Image (cartoon, rainbow, N blue to C red; front, side, top):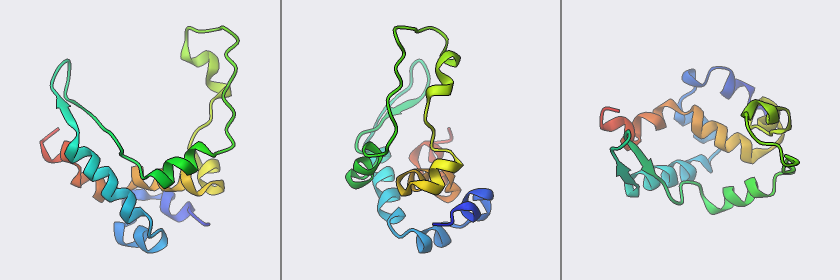
Length: 124
């Protein structure tokens, strides 16, 4: 799966071309938009939404089955930076290796989708 052309310049990639390469994104996007449309909106202490079912169950199953081990913090807490080396990310390496990471990454990179979300339609 060659995703580099999709992520090298996400603003230059249309939703149509992403859907052609990854047809499951249509359902992923529909689920995300539905979740925003049904979300409860709050105004304090700032405007935010609580989302439910924002990812498709199949995608959640794929994410949950990723071979990412939970880091052992060994009782150490405090600064987040202490544990950064033990974290896993949906970065370019994960996107290239795992289709679930690619799907989440493409959702985040789709500027046309972002413009259709209620948060952007309300002037936020």
